[in-house]
Length: 532
Image 1 (spheres, rainbow, N blue to C red):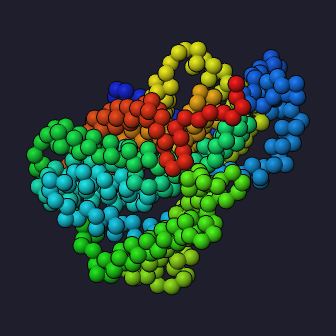
Image 2 (image 1 turned 90 degrees about the horizontal axis):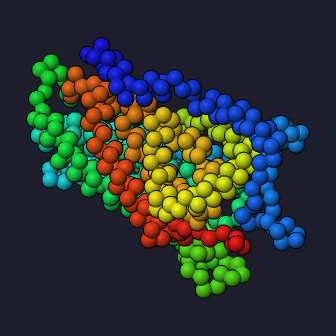
Image 3 (image 1 turned 30 degrees about the horizontal axis):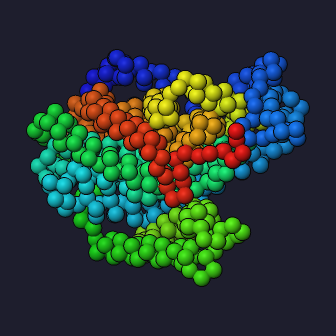
């Protein structure tokens, strides 16, 4: 079997994708090499006087300000690099957001809250609703970080097999929901904090004043719509394409298909009590945030000049910014409440240990963030980001392409890049410095740019062997069918990828065409104040 898998890896387009991707250096070194390339480009651009007219800033005489490329080897930029290095790293917005949210999410995951929630939601599902329920829980499990992959996918196979259905169809539906529906959800979460932190950094470094404020709920309505679109898509593909293609499942004679540990064991009374307590804790945190938003004094609503009579969401800048801390408190409270009842948290030391373990897991991310922070910052120092955005926007405007088409092409580009670079944050850190300001100049808000990126980023997760969990999913599948290889898994997931991409692109284009808000106080289109 191993030889067959190896042979499949080396053949055809998928083999080329894997070979090419495996030759790519680690994302940390990709940023390092890009910084070297950026330095060279900035020197050349400075020598040939590359420039662009700033879209919003004017000179004293009222003429548009000319932004010129600046060499990163200039004395000022060399000094800034070394003197501001600690500041460049620690002021990288995604870093703070991710660290804060993960303090709480680490407790919720390690206490067993996420795993028990997933098991409780899927067990005992009606057969007719089995596929959509598995897909729904799989998408929601993205709030649980790795638990979606590690718990949900093998559990889906067991649940399908128990219902007399093909277990590989359960794996496919769960994998499509967890990974293909990576950005679809009922509420913002860790991914939103990560991506919008990068978006805010790209916006700030562009020096374009579009009156935009970072809001991790900026894609809330859009990701809910994605979930509602993806759910019937995954249901249809599973029941009408994948399961008929798989045929009737016949267990391997020498296999032990129930050797999964405790994924399918019923919840214990302690775990059920923990879930009830976690639900009460969740409601309590929501009530506290609602009181701070709408109660006496409304500390989370802006109450300055010019806000009298405005709708709450137009005064809700402090509320949206507080959601990063809010999610940390919510995950922490729910995890603590669950763990205390389930016996996984016996005292305060256990709680602190779980928070510390969550920080240890972010070790690689810290290294990646250091490299990404300097790439994004140096891109801004050189002025190449703004200049590229201005000329890119002019080229698109001159092409006559409608905005919905432009957003659709960006989704497709994100999907293609995802085949070679697996990290969502690494890709967005590469793309955001150009895409965010360029789309602002075309009338698309940073929220719209982020939404377009995340649609493409999710759709091709399930067909690239470079995705870190792809080998794990293959192992899960081989527990049920021993000769199931890399090509088999990819072929099984390609229909999901195609239909998720088609439906995601269509939704993105329709959203921009209709000009619908992407979240509370987050318009899809934006006008630059003072721009002519």
